[in-house]
Length: 111
Image (tube, rainbow, N blue to C red):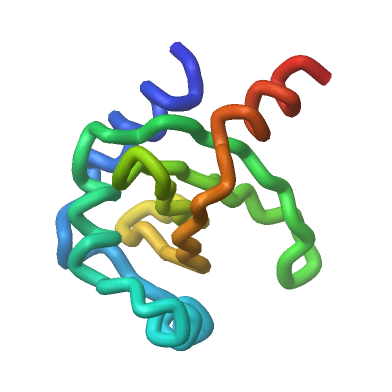
């Protein structure tokens, strides 16, 4: 199973009430004028385009974060960085970008 299908299935395990936003994320969303409900609806939808696994040092260990990319229009992608927990899906950051994410991911895949 590829990472996109895995993440789509994993997202279905969570409800709206099980999705938490970090304080940092809420601040950035306010600066970027991104609505919390639109982020939640994208996470719970099946519109996932790309997924990238990111391993970062966190509290003395390695944390697995997933960067989820959702196409929200012909021009824009919504990038959502999450950590999957047992009961909670923690949203760490949300970015709305007009960069051509498909080209960026193709380059990463070909490396």
